[in-house]
Image 1: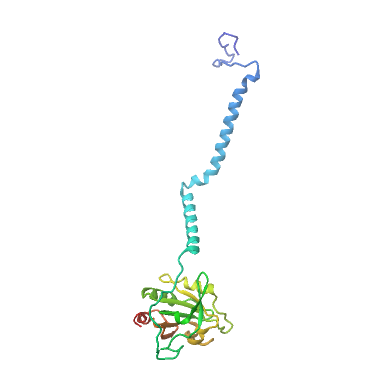
Image 2: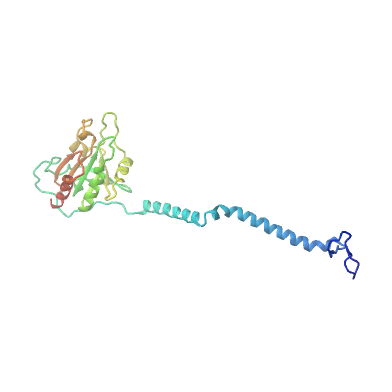
Length: 257
């Protein structure tokens, strides 16, 4: 303390003089107290913000970018699934063979005069004889999707032909027919082509061209490929085909049929 207008009094302990003024009324300190409280609030706010951004700041901008990319990829996948193009059969301008060399359902003859359902967004009744030109793959119960499915999808795509997949609905040894979801999953293994999904509830195709239920060996557990020319004539039926030049030749021969 100092008297009014006087110099600071010397310190009894030899310390430098301190000019301290103690107000007579504590209300004079109210402004300083408010300023102190405002600064404390700012400090606490900075600390809270720091705790929130610290995990992100540790890795820079990597986390926001990765999260944004994942969100865009997810939305793109959903939109493509919902609104993307659906596979449609390639039409043919050829007329059905007027006088095939064999009866319907036989090699050299037309497909049976029956109907199946094309399964895409909805189910479309389709005449079997409209399934041309291309390859019909008949899969047995509990079929384990093989490389030949992707191979046939790619070969038919290159040759501008169709490739259909249909399940044999006949049970075999307690094994149930493949479901439509199983067929779609199998079709999804083909990256160079898009198999079209058929449903043949009456088993017309399987009963006409596929081995009987429970047939032993590869013929009974493998895919049956039915080759159909543009004029609707079945040129070949191959049980348990394998990828290779021979199968490629059979697909390519349909173009000139």
